[in-house]
Image 1 (cartoon, rainbow, N blue to C red):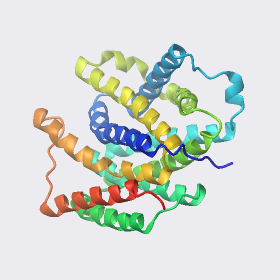
Image 2: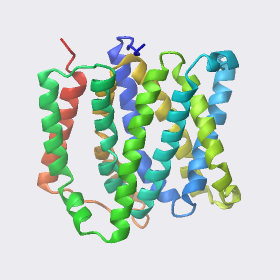
Image 3: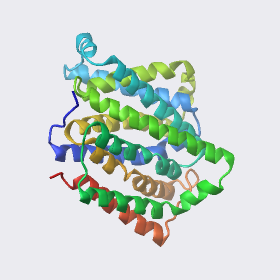
Image 4: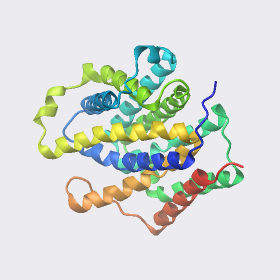
Length: 306
């Protein structure tokens, strides 16, 4: 049986915005943390902390899933969602370490695009002609907005191109994870799904993590690491819940705005910490592209089906 949304699209839209803001600033935090920790340790910490905090929350509200409830769901889908989210984290983090925040966020936009089209094909969701027009406007906007970054991709050294390729793989992995999760909502709550996924991913990365290096961090980098972990818990929780109330294609459209959030947050951060993250400047063409991206995303997300 295919999962059907609750119809509370305003709640789904609001939760999508929460996810958007958190994912938009996340590459900045991850770039900083990767200056002092390896990829495996950062990923492990994010999943482990998210798992522990979610367990505490579910125990507090008396909603911790039972073994019987978990067994009633599809373990195959749970395994697929866990493996592909773990793959997404690994590929994205490795690619981010070899490129830059804005470039990484540009390429990872394949994720919501693939999620959106997956929603159209698998869940039989529908775009109106207004939404297809929005897709066209959004595509043109991204092409203009990221002109300079896309140009860099064609002239960068092998390491930069390799990192970009890893992020593409991460985008594909994320879309598969998201589609599997949406179907899992048929038998499990969003929090129960994320509990299993967080725990499974933490176990996968435990053998590779250098946990002792975390205790050597100063207060600044430890704070950034904790922020990244909380970001994981809150953003994915909001994302999972948004799929309960809104179509996957429209959630994906809202999340397509993340590069703009990344660029703005990166600029603001560089104003205060100029030695940690260099400033990025937009041309007039880039600014015009940004408005097209916003307009296209809003058209896709808010135009309700007839």
